Image 1: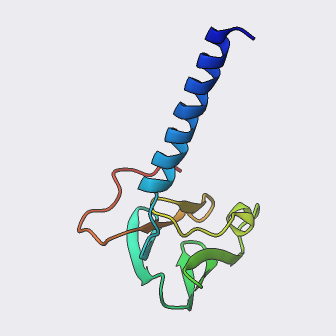
Image 2: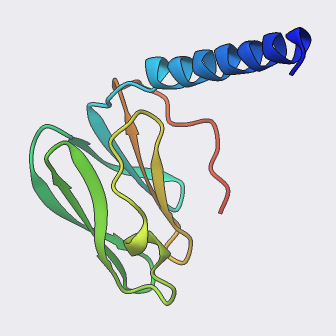
Image 3: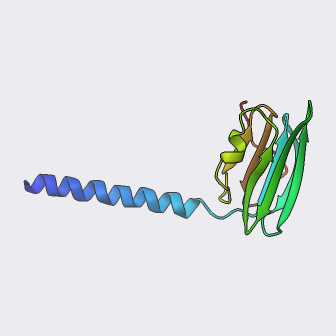
Length: 122
């Protein structure tokens, strides 16, 4: 290995560590869970309070949102594919779970604001 190779390797490692530090430094734990169905905000829940919520959407769509230990997850859904049920728990700011057949989105935020997210694509 030449001296230039060692310097390049060190620069790449430093940039990688800085990127990881930036990601974890800006991705703070969230405080609230927002639920949107068909483009409308239908619920806001505190992540610090354990609760189970039934989210109903058009045409008999039903999702069960469970919040426990500061994490939110969809535990049950009657949609055909069930991708929202197998999604991992969410707890960090801007993480989301989406159920396309029910046009439902769940995401976490650090603070409540008057406006909703800019856009969601189904």
